[in-house]
Length: 73
Image (cartoon, rainbow, N blue to C red; front, side, top):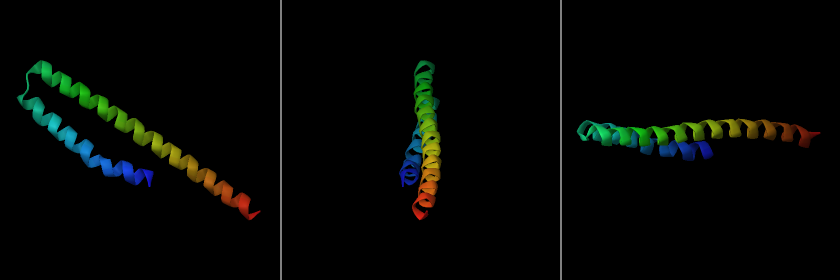
């Protein structure tokens, strides 16, 4: 469910990337640099969040599996 929620937000991040690129074409170089830096910052957080959630879910699945084995015994 957490992965689904995160993936549901992916189109917003993609749209932000598209809009940033479009703005870069029309903005002055100093503004363009700010847009690029801000988007890279957001993208970095997004990537870290995806990785952390992926690791957390894997760990949770491992714990759940062990718990089921324990319950059966």
